[in-house]
Length: 229
Image (tube, rainbow, N blue to C red):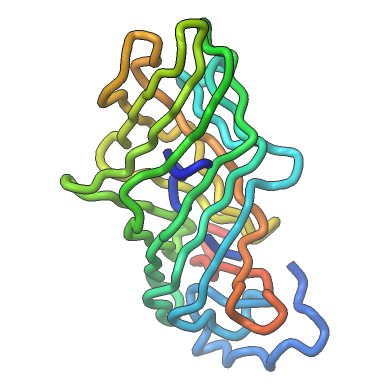
């Protein structure tokens, strides 16, 4: 993840109330996976750019253990994705997550005095959003989801590099706040001195997801299968 994307991931994209003057609603039989303004709103167009920042009052966290509280918290984080395909629901929309950034980060790791930067490497990442409400951000063997942390210590700065376990991270969409949430997504240290924790777990909630290409920058919704609503 970049100053602010390990991740973050990716992603990483989808989703309050229709604004006055919004386009006419889509035919119920032709509603797409990603829509704007409402669940039955216009389809998000291929090529549109979606973005979201961490939900107000929350942080993007990289903790050293699942369920722990030791690690790094970033008050600023955001992702940017471009829609590649948006089929009729139920289905799987595809995106390319081109940017994931982190900033205003602090750490409570023993020996760490400051966080210089958090950078997500190897973008873009292939990203899917399906009608089951699952977001998957995927790297490859040659270009994994990789996050580089530059940390200040009493002995100087160190660089810690982490890669996602199983080459991907997964999140969940919610139409209640048009969010994408990632919970304790695992990363393993691929390089760095002993000062660097051996693992990291990424948690963040991004909301609301906005279509920055469409007129008025509307909120994005995901049309879920009935049993997952």
